[in-house]
Structure formats: structure tokens, C-alpha cells
Length: 197
Image 1: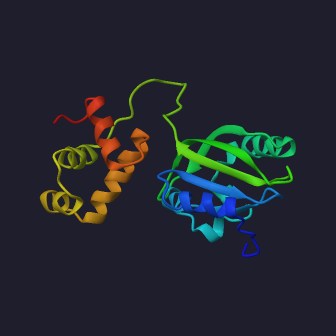
Image 2: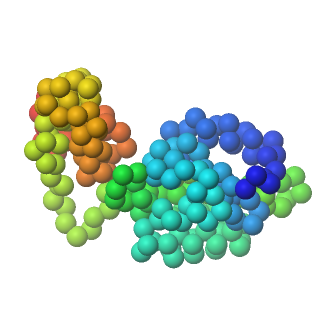
Image 3: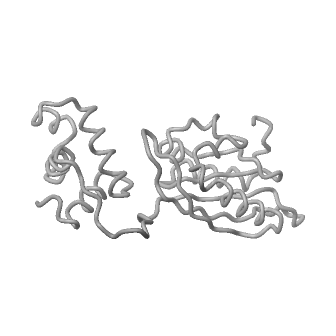
């Protein structure tokens, strides 16, 4: 989508989006995505080029695609803001519940140039049971060491496993606790009594 007109407004949004800690996307006046920020790539693992146009929809949970399409196209038709929650694929494996909010970008003539939207991970949505998700014994060991300030390399040495395996356990625990980073994962494990510091 190299034919995008990077207006001043779009350039300002892109400059902010490049450094934002949450996902940001932009569409053109036809509703086609022409920009996904680095947080999108980090969260989903999908390269930006693959997500442009309608490629980003490949990251949606199949059961949520229709609701996301409907919310976007209803808002786009009426040029109104909207919000929608859905499951988004996480780099590595699984899906996480996210919330997306978007607003139309109007030009000086009052026409809609497209939308700017944000996406951020939300709390676990489980209406069937309230039992806490249990971490594996190895995940607990890894998080216990992370909680006292050990790096992934130090944890790998202590547990006699590879750093990559340490990161895999941390990522698995992040998904289970619906956390966005290692610190939040450790805090969640402490709050649920799965690790003690």
C-alpha cells in the first residue's frame, strides 16, 4: 500500500504510534488498513506488510470475525466512532481478548479520510467459571526467580534449561494470566497465590 497519501495529520499519528505501548492502526477512506504500528507486530507476530489491506483479519479468532466486520462497517458507513471486543492471535500461540476503539479522521472539507484505531489487551473474559488458571510447576519456578530479579539467562543457568525455554515458559504464563509483560505476569501469579516472594 505504497500509494498512501501521508497527510500532516496521518504523519503526526504515525509518529506517535511508532512509540506507543499499545497497538494502533490506520485505514484509508475506503476502509482498507494501510498502517499497523510496531506494537501490533510485537503482539501478533504478523509482519506489518502482511497485515495491510485486509491481512490483519487473519489474526482475528474465526468466531469473532463477523462481529468485528459488522462493528467496523456500521461505523464506517455512518462515519462514527466505535468500540468492539474480540480475540486476537498472540505471537507464538493462542488468542487474547482485546478491546479496539476507533474514530474517523475528517479532512478540512468535512470528508472522512479514514479511521485511526487502538487495540489493547483486556482482562480475561470467562463467564463459565471463575477458577484461576493454574500455572505449571516449571512456570511457577521461572516466575518465582523472575520475581526476585533474576534475568532469563540467570534463570536458565539456575534451572539448567535454555534461555529460549525460559522465555517460552514466561510467554505461556503471560497467556494464562492474560498479562502483557513479565512484570504483570509475576504480579498476577503473586495475587493468585501461585508464587510467594
